[in-house]
Image (cartoon, rainbow, N blue to C red; front, side, top):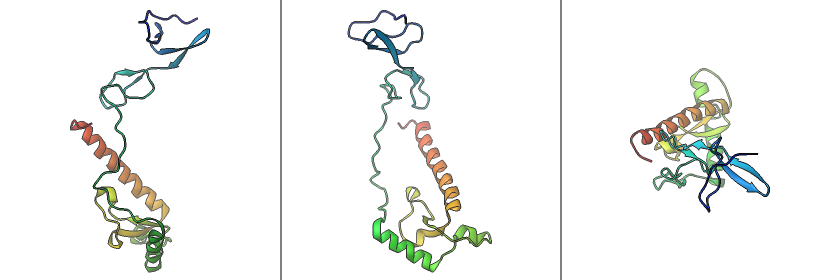
Length: 155
């Protein structure tokens, strides 16, 4: 049997021993979720509703940036990809290192998120391992940019 603390009418009971919300499922009261700290950097408020954020730090909904570059998709992208591989079939980073590896992807030299354009002069043929390494570095820079916003006080 779980002990519950006194609670106000209309509010769910909170376990006096553990501090998490309890759900009433008939004759047995079971915990719904253990409290977790707010996921906003620097906030330690315990959240019990499962959202991961306290009321002071609501999660921002994702929206495409108005300045985002227009991406080429569909048949136009497939045509550009085929033209690129016809002109330059080898992975450009591997070729610079003296390796002969067939390219399998059309890659942006400067990522669109970092200000690159979706044009031929910003495209290079690349193999999957090189693309993975490059993408990992781009993701790390993106995370640093996001955290820099938090450090500067932006939500």
